[in-house]
Length: 236
Image (cartoon, rainbow, N blue to C red; front, top):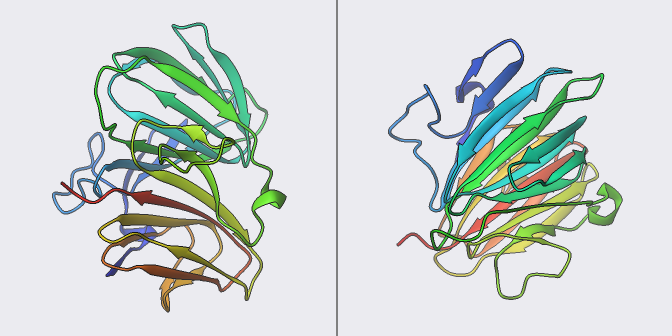
């Protein structure tokens, strides 16, 4: 099953400094049919204006993955972590038993990013933050694990406390990539740029595809495309 969630159907809010689209219920946007997808709880498509950002605020018991599409984001937290993540790269924050953090666009241009929240498989872990570079050329024509808690995860992938994986790829128009899924697992796929087809089903730019009961995904680029895919454990 592939359920396409068209970009124009997403919830959201424009706060001036922040223009956010929500694939799932979040903040003041509520849709009982879009409460998450397995362990995937949030997928926000954010535009953060230059010189603005999120002031200090708390989280707990959530794995928060930030995929920067354009510009850069600067992170600070109460554990004295601080770092800048630029377009194409990824940061992971394990909120665990509690973390206070802030995120700022200190650039002279707007920043666009995906913020992905995955529920952990255990609560109360030590809070942590990491960032890593993932050059787009290194994932051209192939899906590369960006963040993962799977047993066979490559060392380069940022660790998350869940049997899930966030993968990224860039595809030239007319090319394809295949992703095998273990029985019962779920997936959620968003083209950050360009249109794609998944097993013949078209998914527009920044639209979402909620996937289940499939063992093989053939992802074909209708345009030059950049994709982010989350592979999730079976629902309990």
